[in-house]
Length: 210
Image (cartoon, rainbow, N blue to C red; front, side):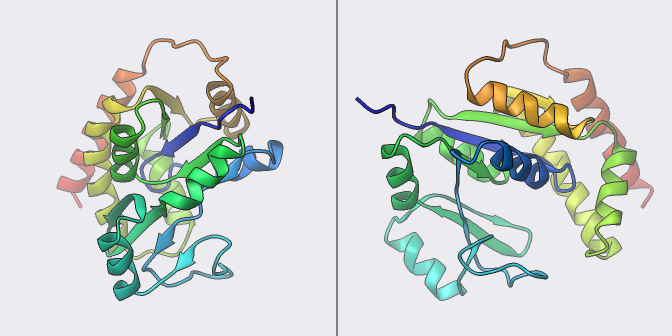
């Protein structure tokens, strides 16, 4: 019998580099499928419909929610994102692992519906590095960066629900760790709880002084 694929969820505060990690993993492992989300936000830069995202309007998204077509969906900042159940099931039946680059709201929805899913939370090594990455994108205003930091505090409080915490202080090393977890080769080590608490505290202090 063919092996059924597994769901691999990668979440992280905005600016941590989860899309970069997921993109490099797919380059290394082309057999890993990606979940292409539906979103109500407009395309950025060179994004193409059906490649990076399926871009739909609010009415179409509402119709999909009402029809129960999403495995998970969430509102992130000003827009909604969701994963079509039928697309994922088709890939799993083909024996392909499906990689999700999604926020923690969607990750926890998947955990409730698919308890055997692998949930991996990426952490930045420090607030300074997180800010450097956010500001380096040059796509967001100071107000938007503040909002992303506010969201990061809530995400850090919820990351305890993820089985694996990976620090993205070395890009290639982070990709290696995610792949080892996907393949079932990783051994659970000590969780970096001190880093989680330090990040949360540093972000809260920064927000107070903003």
